[in-house]
Length: 72
Image (cartoon, one colour):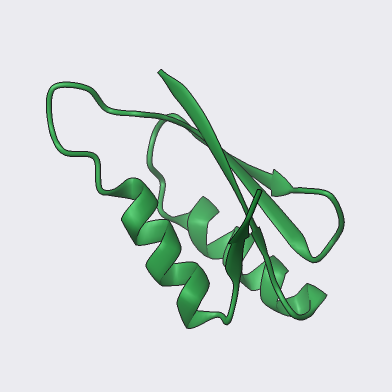
């Protein structure tokens, strides 16, 4: 099952740092790109079934450490 989440950041360098950090994780099934603007990062990912999927929690923690927040 596919899902997506978008995060907003205070400035472009922070959004870019977040984008590159997530890209560097090397996890399969994740597509990361800029969202609505250069201050937003959109992540499309495949939810793992049959086990607990901690990806969204990890993304929330990473975004929080960069003063980012999820947007709808």
